[in-house]
Image (cartoon, rainbow, N blue to C red; front, top):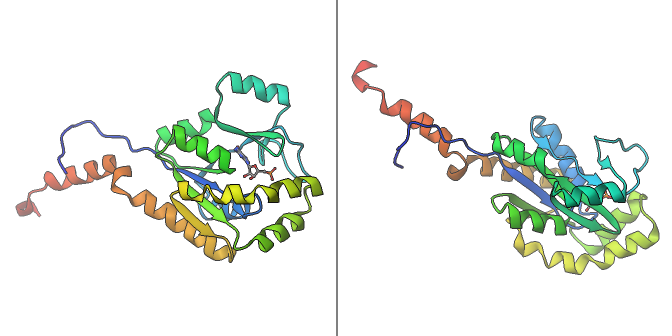
Length: 219
Ligand code: 5GP
């Protein structure tokens, strides 16, 4: 590596995108990751769906009307947005990009359409596909949540084959059979990505400079 400038290169943070079919367990994995890494920034999505029992504005989602959401689309306020089962969901652009620019990492939990949009605009992101171990497990999980109508559940399950076909566009795949293992693998991905030389050029430069200025005789 050649050390050329006196100016420090600022390393960007990681955009970790956790995605996959509904019922894959993305939310549960993200909750566990946030407990393990309390300093990891989490992007709160905006949605036009009604809040569910126990959900709080600004904590689970920013809940908005269709009209409000569409104004924000026109203002180019989203890193990505998608209509998921008849409701809009979107990732506010400013929060995530500001943090990454500052060198802080951001966790996103989004559906597959959204992840593919992020990949188009920000291919340096790390894209992780979470898949349930089988169709039976997936349908049990979705029914077991008890949060959606029969009609919504059927729509979600009907989409699964198309959604599985998108897995090859991701960087990593995790089969979420045993939750602890899936969480462990997600942590391993985050740790490995954070050690990549290409993500640490600025830091490496600072460390190398210290070595270069040392005289062995003076020790
Ligand atoms: P739910 O209504 O169950 O909270 O979420 C439904 C689906 O929308 C899930 O697959 C979830 O990952 C996805 N989702 C949540 N937030 C976003 C977002 O900001 N953008 C996109 N594209 N999908 C999202």
